[in-house]
Image 1: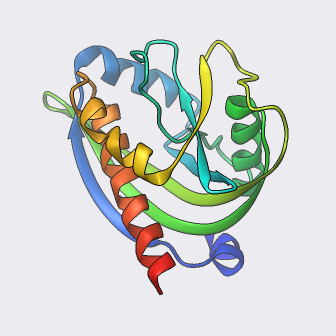
Image 2 (image 1 turned 90 degrees about the horizontal axis):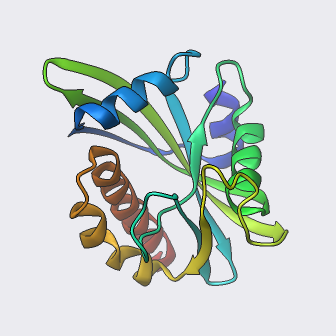
Length: 183
């Protein structure tokens, strides 16, 4: 399935990471995997020179990250990306580049699960920037890459292995995007 995606959007940089999770967060991750999901698509959607970001209902004010969502077993990755972009941001998008594939292990005590994130850049095509899935997303915003990078410390102060992972993922994407733009 990813061979066709790589042909169309490029071969991503591959990374491996590991993060501890608290028991509540780990149980939530496990529940999300009941239908066989073990991966997500994460989107850095550009609208002009800004990135579209989301805030979950439980995030403290001012905390945002790139939208993402689980890839359902057997689901087409492009369709998954477009579905998640619309549900979380209200935006219709076009994928641009497959930038990272991250294999991550989340650990809680002696237990662990393996997860994969497929990270793409995309461009905004149309739509009102507001969450469609308001149960899952409370706010949509626009940020420069610099503003997004500055959120790292705020992400790291949260008691959440998932948010610590999102901080590392975001840092890796910004580094990759910045080095590509310099070439």
